[in-house]
Image (cartoon, rainbow, N blue to C red; front, side, top):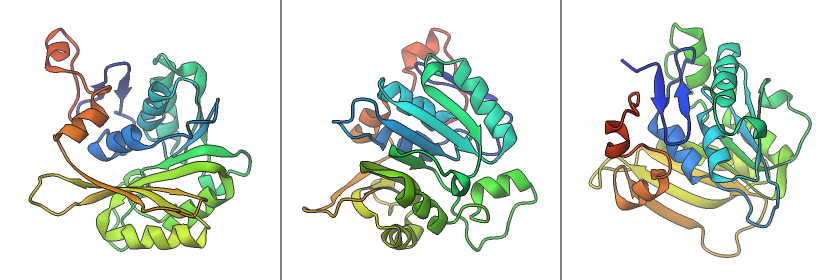
Amino acid sequence: MSNNYFSFRQFTVRQERCAMKVGTDGTLLGAWATVPALVPRPAVLDVGTGTGLIALMMAQRFPQADIKAIDIDGEAVAQATENIEASPFAGRISVSKIAVQDLTEGRFDAIICNPPFFTEALTCPNERRTAARHTLFLTYGELMAAAGRMLSDVGEASVVIPTDFMSDMNSAAAIAGLHPRRVCYVKTTARKPAKRVLLAYSRLHPHEEIDTRTIVIGDEEYNRLTGDFYLTPEEKASGNTTGNR
């Protein structure tokens, strides 16, 4: 059973009001997504913010960025607002209850989403969990169409999905005029096939080979990505406690 909060090094995420809890997928995406280096004040859109985790991670990583976090779940919006207001980054993150399909204003240098991915599986009796996990309210096509509409010319749209659905996301991105820029496969162990993949798309046609990598949960690259966020054993022992990862 998950704890009601998860402590990171610079902020704490409470999650008792959210259908989806803090997990490896969101944490990796928040640590991997990027903003254009030459944009002095990048604008970031976090789609389906949930607890606000990814918005908080992007605010920590990019001190000049302004982040807009959105969700269709009112309880998640309230929870994310509480988490952000209690963080050091409250002045740079706004939270709104709106579907990305209905967002008509703004251009963003980074659009980030840990999207629903179940397309044909049985839905959950819990309606809020169904909305968070199933593509009933946000299909890959709708997500990429929104990214194609709002992404800046130099920006990236980044997602994390099961590898089984990678071709579906690539097709949706292509229809929206977006092209793969970076790919990172995520394995639970070195010997097993990757179950998750991090994908980044942009408007720019790739002029060179797509940056493709593989990380294993717990390996050197994984620890490098997440090292600024997860508490060390010493920090935990000093009284900083975490919820389940």
